[in-house]
Amino acid sequence: MRARIYPLALGKIIKHALIDPGNEIAGLLIGKYLKKNDVLEIWDAITGDQRSTPGFVYLHEDTIAHAAEWVIRNRPGLYIVGWYHSHPGFNVFLSAIDLETQKRYQMLFPKAVALVVDPLKYSKTGKLSDLRFSIFRINRRGQVVRVPTSIGIHRRKLLESTLKGVETMELKYINTGQEAEVEEYEVAVNNDEGGGERSNFPIGSVLKKFKDRFIP
Ligand SMILES: [Zn+2]
Image 1 (cartoon, protein in one colour):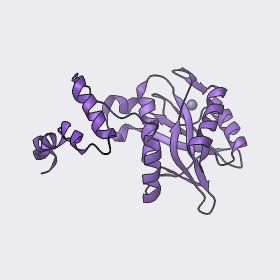
Image 2: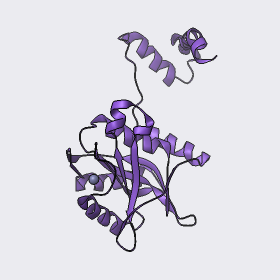
Image 3: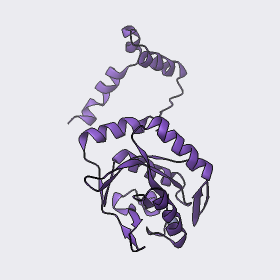
């Protein structure tokens, strides 16, 4: 079996791990298994209430139950295909506790995987080469194996997983302290007919101002 993870799902997991790079974080992987190609696709990630220390993390059972319900309602055709957690500063592998957890996921769904990410070095250097992550599962002989993983390139699915994924991702918001302008912008974006309103948001002049920097 191979795994294919779409960039937004991976990005969300890394972002989550970086919120608190000193503690373990955990969440669930959303996707589907393609029997024909023997590929597990990871489209999105979801998290919720958990207990965490620098060396241990677990998701509350209620979190998993609610997440499963949320996926059924909001991600038709997809399901929980495994879990992710971080190992801040102690590299990527499955510990003895992780192995027991993974067994339970594979009992529920035989193709389930465990994604482990170590965000600590990357959080300090910002260098992509310092970011460590791997996907694991337990094979028929009970051994932990690394699942060969690619970052998704299937174009239609890339777009679809991105569009679905951004529904639950916060957009960076730059607060300039100019409340009035912010409100006008929101009116302009939400108002389909009000063509005149759009001119209130000075995107044209902003773009002109920075054009030299972005377009050589
Ligand atoms: Zn672990």
